[in-house]
Length: 129
Image (cartoon, rainbow, N blue to C red; front, side, top):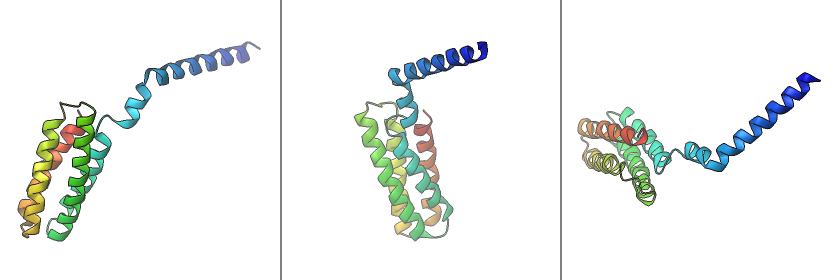
């Protein structure tokens, strides 16, 4: 009987504690990852795919354009959410992605790859802030 009572008290305590976390909004903050982070993670995935296609300008171009699309979405989400600290890394990553796209269109895969790498550094900086 003591074991059942102990388990019941423990279960009630867990329920009360978990409701307190949900009521404070903490659970929502950790699930969403912050303003623009989810979109930036998608931008990172596409930029990494672009980087793996070192000698194929058309593949670099395809993934860099998709990455740019997500980075711009992350920028809009960060601005809407008031994330001023993330603006510089996002702006820099967008600038590097645009340069990578321009060089990929010209067939300059080495230079495009360098810009992808630089964009990824900025994106990771934003995503981990």
